[in-house]
Length: 168
Length: 254
Image (cartoon, rainbow over all chains, first blue to last red; front, top):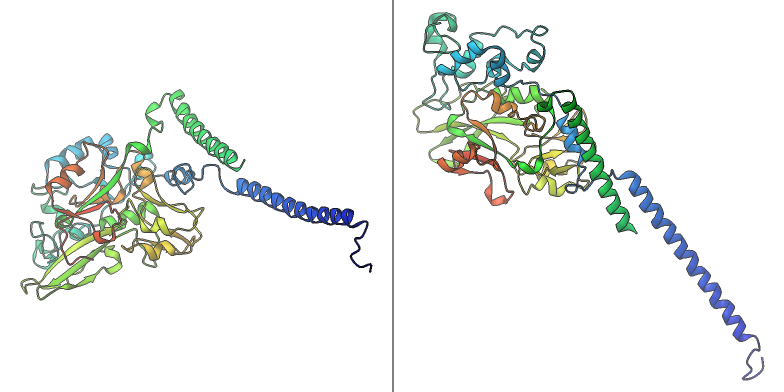
């Protein structure tokens, strides 16, 4: 090696060298950009368009949850066809009780009254489910001890179910 | 570029939803039944709930109605709403005895005697539909959320079943539905209240102990309830923004 000698092709070599480094950079950058595009594309495919409309959730979930059909028709639906009973009920102590509280869910009966008839109620079990005495119940609430009330008679033979207090 | 795309998707989603709802309404109007058109707007409502403990008789009607309305499994013992019985002895009000046989589904058998100085009462429980709900905050995938009208709901399609929300709820109101392995909870009968009906539990409560309320409706009786009673929420120190207001809540209730 010549002392203090400078290779005649040194400039060109370093030029080639740095170009090769730049190619490395380009490759990495290209890989990164492809990865980013792929991520954006896959994300756009997987995230539903309505996600984030109202908050960090899928807005369509609200619509999904609303789709369920109600089982309980509601007392106004009953009053539409049974105004006589509804009026009698309104005058008595049971006025605030919804029809389906005793008669069970009757949405299907309200939708097609002929097809589904409500079942007969189990008395006295139904009456006693509210009116059996219990120390945890509010004092004001009318309660009885079934063993010393009624002499085994059917509740509705003395009390009118829809307007108790009156004879049936 | 990313922002543009995101904006575009957000707008597209909005228009998709709007046209969908508008299309449904249009069909009903054209069929001559405009009353059936969906005119429910989430921004018009802010749902809350009120329970008057002094009216609860522990009959369990609400528990049975909730299971019937929402298809909640009868067994094992999972509940969207349940009733607890508290028995507080005068010398130790900090440690009440609490029982809830089958969630109160079949009512309560007499356990305690009157006249020994103790007191007992029933406490119906359910989701508090918190405005700042812990369950919503811990959900890692956005499956649990508070709707714009204030109801905490679960997106069954998004829920992974990780159970994080079940642990986070300070009121124990959530469970993992064994049929779907997704989190389940009270929806405040969202499918009913958005159709102008009340919840199943309120519909059947024989004493009016339960009451659904829309705080954005100035004519709703819940305003009178909140004004006329001394009300309290459960665990106010948790700052959950609970919207289930109790009247007559004893200090021993957890």
